[in-house]
Image (tube, rainbow, N blue to C red; front, side):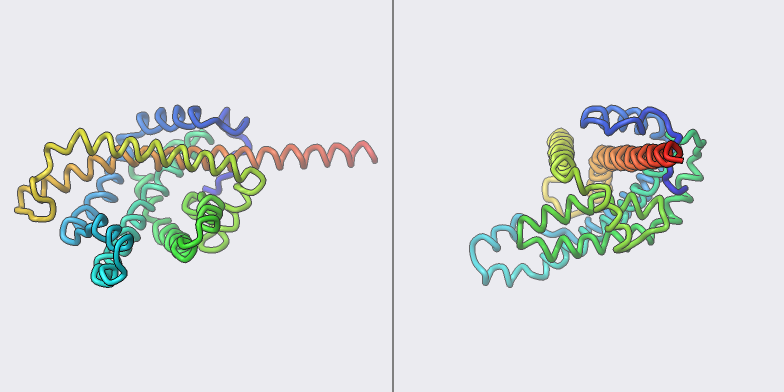
Length: 278
């Protein structure tokens, strides 16, 4: 699947607004949830089991950064562990990026998909996407001390994983194509990134509050039963949060197809002008 949507339907006609993207995402997420469900479990159960045994206290790390450099040195092992767990989580999420982007492209190019084809496609592109995602987060990590480069690189490369999923590109080539899709409309892309991030945080926070009473009293001290309960609850939260992986996929397909259509129209205009001159 190469992502060429020139003959797709309404999603290709123009760039969608925020609420239109949310609406399209909700339709696809609901309509194809049975196909996604095994992939959601494959992505989220392993990482939540790992995180059960390697729990880092982000609050202590932030307090150490704010209060005392000596304290920061003391929590550095936990900080490194937290970074590694974050990257491992993103690697597993890459499975969802592949599957969701594949389904969105299939839907808007009129192709049939099955649960088997979604899973096969996701695993076939997993390493490519994970490599690109790790490169992306390395760049973000090095720019984290400077707010403007951090914002610029995050927005410019926001479509890196989707591109790696549906094209032959990986690494810097995928990042470069993402920059191409973002450039010219940077502040609009930035606005969408901020709005989707705020919505995602709000959704996760709300679900976590609703489920808070079901968690074990002491997080991190588990029996088999409380460990199973904690993993189950965390997977439920992650499944709700995965809706925004779909949002990202629909947004990417819309931007990609719109850019392709705009280039096609420009080329048709040039060809027509050349024919008139002849």
